Length: 303
Ligand code: ADP
Ligand code: MG
Image (cartoon, rainbow, N blue to C red; front, side, top):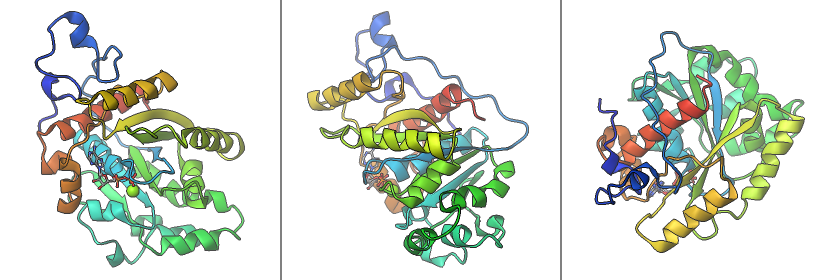
C-alpha cells in the first residue's frame, strides 16, 4: 500500500513551479499548505463518528467522495461504514454491487424498528469498508415516513446499534433537502459539503448552510460543518482558479486544503465498480483522496 503522495502529484502543485519557499508552501487553495501527517493506527475500534456528505445539487461529487474518502480511511486502518441515503443506489454501483440484489436496505431499517440493522450491512471488496445499501425502494420510504412519529430520527435510530463496530460512518446524501437528507443530518456529527468548481458553485450553498443551522438548533445539536471540499477543479485554466478563489474567499476557514481535480479517471472508476485507490492506486486522484482522509482526521479528530 502506497500512502505517501509525492508533492508533484498534489492537485494544483506543478512540479516545475519556482522552488522558492513561498511557492512550495502555497497549496491549491492559495493558502499555505500544512503537512497532514500519516494518521496513527488505532488499536481499538468504535464508537464511530458520523459524517454526512451533503449538497442538494446533483453531480457535485458526493458519491465519488463517499467511496474514495471511505476507501482511503480504510487504508489508514479505520473501520468504515458507507450508508446510501439516495434511492439512485449509485454508492452500490460505484462499489461494483447491484443495488437491486439486496434483501434488506436502508428503506427497511427506516420503516421497521424490529429489524437488526447489522443484517442489512454488506461487505465490499475493500478490507475494512462495509456498505448499508439503498435502492429505488427508498423513494417510497420518504413518502411513508412523513406520517411517522419521530420521522426525522429514523436513520439515527437505525445506525445507533452499528456505531460501536466502526470508526467512521459516511452518509451519501441524495441531491435534495427533503426528509431523507434531514434524517442524514439528524444522524450525523458533522457535514462535508462537496462543491463542484464551476461558475454557479456557490448558488444554493447559503440555503444548505441555513438548513444545517436549523437542524443543529432544532433536531441535533452535535451537528457541525466540518468542511467544504472543492471538487472537479481545473487548476490549468484561469476560470478554474478564479472559481476556487471565490469559494475560499466566501468560506476562508472552512475550505479543505485538499482539492480534488477534474479527471476522467473518476468516471472510469465508477464504470469499473472500484474506488480509485484500488483501480488506479498511484494516480493523482487516489493521492488527493488519501490527502483528504489525512486532513479530515487532523482537523476533525472524531476518530
Ligand atoms: P453526486 O453524488 O453529487 O451526484 P457523483 O459523485 O456521482 O456526484 O459525480 C457525478 C459525476 O461526475 C460522476 O459521473 C462521477 O464519475 C464524475 N466525477 C466525480 N468527481 C469527479 C472529478 N473529480 N473529475 C471528473 N469527474 C468526476
Ligand atoms: Mg450521488
